[in-house]
Image (tube, rainbow, N blue to C red; front, side, top):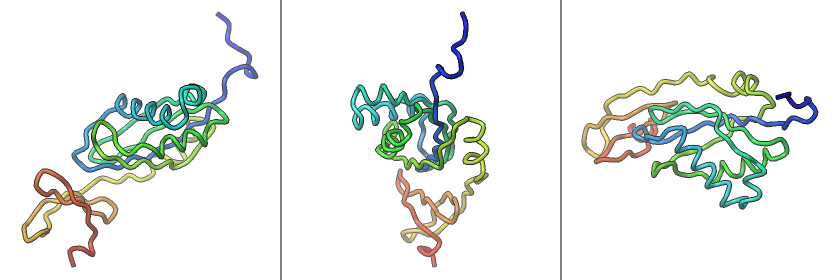
Length: 159
């Protein structure tokens, strides 16, 4: 079967997406893709979500942080950003989704917007609520493990 000429092939935009959740959040690429589809369908409707054709191409998540590349049709990048902004939980785990940038190729998307953080969360002991507890530290922010959940804090909360 012959390939389509370049001028007839579909054009795409690639969105670099940063993910942040509590350190005990556990979801994978399939769960994130499902959340994107539901958000797009609820916001744009059946026809609009089919036109945008959002798909997760790359996904990496662990220890409460992660990143992904989401593909959208050319001309539907704004709708894709809006649909991603509607996601507040994935598989019953609260998550923050931030679009870091939009690119015309996967390679440019990776080089410009992904992998630059290089942050590895550190775990340390803190005194919180009159008890010593473990906390996960990321960029000066602390997620303190309380009774079966997490509480967000900063260094100023401990001074």
